[in-house]
Amino acid sequence: MGIRPAAPPLLLHDVIDDLGAVERLLVEQAPNTPLGGWYSPESDLGAATRPLWFQDDWVHDTFHAPGSELFLHHPGYVEAAKRFSGAEVVVPTSVYVNVMTAITEGGPAHTDNPRFLGRDRTNTPMWVLRAMLWSGLFHDHEVHQVTAIWWMNDVEGGALRYWPDGPDRAPVDHDTAMANTALVGDNHTMFHQVGPIGPFGSGTLRVTPRAEFAPIGDGSGDWAVTDRGAEVLRAPLHDVRVSVLWKADVWASAEELEARAGDTLSMVDVARTFDADLVERGAAVRFDLDRLDDPVLKAALAEVYPEAVPIGAFASAFG
Image (cartoon, rainbow, N blue to C red; front, side, top):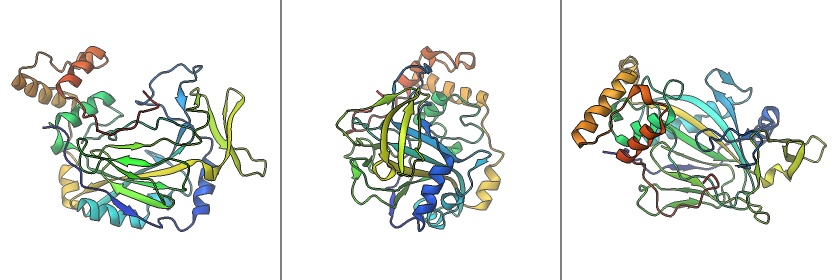
């Protein structure tokens, strides 16, 4: 079965009228910290292993940064999400910013992490959610989401490579005139990847998870990456790749949203569904709820339900 196909994304132009408001948000919500999570799971706070890819939530769960409604309730996003998905109901859920510089290899080629009715990262290991997605067994319970990626500026490199026709077809690059454009689509089923980002003279710079990216505040307008008290890089903001991501749940109708609200999956449901399919496939492994922290179980499920590897991907700074 596998992952469901995604339609090609929509490209929007002249998205934000007040770019100064975005810069104020960046300053007010600084500092940003290095991207970690499932891309970079190591926990050694003293090891300089992470590239200069910084992230910060502006809207997530109960947090709502003042001024972030500029993106959260953007009418152009809502309209584009309806056009893209054919949905009547669009429920914005999150906004976050990525700030990146000096990454020679680029980011990982990936699909975004999925959610299902009753199952998300708050109550289910991420590897299980991804196995649920790639197995194709839980399409009826997947929460469909639309993502908009907006770029503040044009920098050296920093293209977005994406696979609108599937991972086994040639990718497309959005790499020119990116400033104030947004790509609206289904990043949970469409592979995408950040390309190499300059400056390239010193290769990929790496910092510890304790590093921060913030304005210097000396009147120059420069920002700096600092790590363990040392300045790693200083640059004006317009030389750094800044992108803001918006996500929304989409529903065919208000009636569908109401009808499916109680149709949630328990972990027992997940285990039963996996096991029935594993038996049908003749696989020896079973989905043991007592072994969710066991890397052997994770590897065994990944072998049965492998994630695709898109052709033409850049090397990743995350390995």
